[in-house]
Image (cartoon, rainbow, N blue to C red; front, side):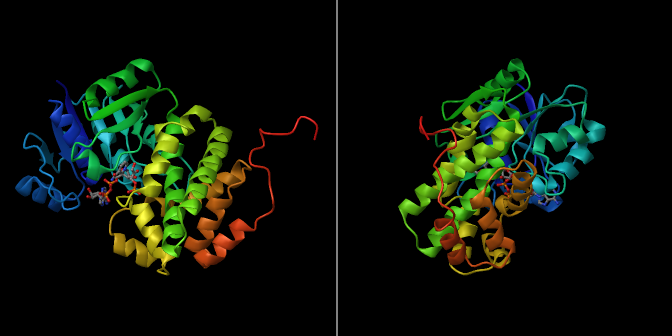
Length: 337
Ligand SMILES: NC(=O)C1=CN([C@@H]2O[C@H](COP(=O)(O)OP(=O)(O)OC[C@H]3O[C@@H](n4cnc5c(N)ncnc54)[C@H](O)[C@@H]3O)[C@@H](O)[C@H]2O)C=CC1
Ligand SMILES: O=C(CO)COP(=O)(O)O
């Protein structure tokens, strides 16, 4: 059994800590918020996972050095906007070759870097890997069967992560495509916001299926242009995560989108959801990346217009429907044009 730490006790960190503790590992969990650690120690419950009992074997600490020292794996699970700052704080305590598994889904707005790229910049001595897929914490913490993919630079590391997490209710696949996995996870949040907006406007299942299909087409186009592998975008961290986020009421991105579709402002929607709405931060980064790589992303563009450009959701939908006529895929052409 391994000694491991969860760095960030939001709902996802707690759910992953539970998987690891249930597999018999010695789990330490750290939060930047001392009050949160106090509450977790006292109740072994998490306010955003009602009815879930956290295993008593998990040790909660507010001491980052304690959390990083002598641990076989550190799972970095703070929301994406805090990833770089927390990685920087970890720097004095991380050892050469220490395994860090990044599980946040986002792209840094200023640098357009993925989570693992930021972590590598702050912790050049670490072995940085990722874990992602269709996996709402509300379900994982209740032992509902879930599948994810572990991405690492070498097969041995990916299989090590697979062995640590894998159980009869948490199946882990492996992959070498770290970049594709991260881009799928971050960009699907923008499409999930749009899917929520569509629901909030009162559109139907046809509309949502269209958003999901055209959404993964946009994500794949950008992801492949950036160096991700096409197969990753049709896998668990791509279409898999897009499906769950666009259809589940557990999704904070979808819930925020529904409120915006119903007429609330972005800020009102974020305040009402209370938890992290990652797509709001990734939307601008996705738009900047689409310009940088010269990739057409009409859904990302219109979502930005609704979030930041003062356009109404109904106008954005109409503009998407009446956009220039086009072929479904540039890869599908007639033999004699
Ligand atoms: N919740 C889920 O089902 C899943 C979430 N993720 C990803 O995991 C990441 C974390 O998500 P959640 O745990 O759901 O978010 P959350 O909304 O539960 O996170 C809130 C937590 O952030 C931490 N925090 C607050 N202020 C902080 C600060 N100044 N510095 C450092 N940490 C601070 C606290 O521990 C707080 O409990 C996100 O990137 C999300 O996309 C990935 C898969 C599933
Ligand atoms: O990434 C997730 C599930 O795989 C969580 O999505 P939300 O952040 O929209 O809740």
